[in-house]
Structures are given as structure tokens and as C-alpha cells.
Length: 132
Image (cartoon, rainbow, N blue to C red; front, top):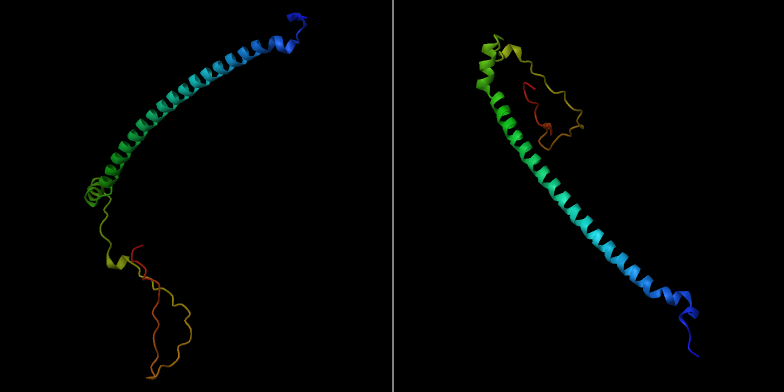
């Protein structure tokens, strides 16, 4: 006996339609994902360009500020400003400088050498700078 389509299970009847629907969803999803990815790449490219321009501007400002600092810290310019502002500043006189001696560190007892004279131990620390 021949079977009718009406007698077939529902899964067999809707199988090809379900496959077509899933295929359309997959193709649509891939298409939307591709467009989103391209949009993200474009936005990131624009961000990179903007930040590179900002970086170049900041580097240029940094160079200008370094030149200004070099100029303002030069002794000639400072002397000129002292004269303009009548600050009556000048080089330090020897009597104005206080030299501080570094206190001696407690050293281990020194044993007498073979010649009978005592050895002097040198400090391992560098001497302090004057004027700091």
C-alpha cells in the first residue's frame, strides 16, 4: 500500500524546511559578523590615527618646552633676570659657605701591624659635595 504524506511523522515533513532555515540563519549571522568586524577595524584605525596625531602634537610641545627650559635655566638668562628685577644677587662669598665634616663611623679596633704603627682605615663613602 502506498503511504500518504499526511501519514508521515512531522519531523520528516519539517526537516528540509528546518535545514533551510538554519542555513539562512548561519549565512545571515556570518554576514552580520563580517560587517561588525569591518566596522570595528575601521573604528580602531580611526582611533589609532587620532592618537598618533595627538602623540605627534605632544612630542612637538615637549620639544618646545625642553628648549624653553634650556633657555630659562641658562646662566646668562638668569643673570639678566636678576639685573632686571634688581635682586642684588651675586656669587657666594667664602664666608657664607659652611663646610660640615662627616662624623666618624665607629670602626673596628685596629691591631698593631708588624712595624708597630697603627693603620688608618679610609671611609668607603664618597665625600659630601659642598653647597648641597
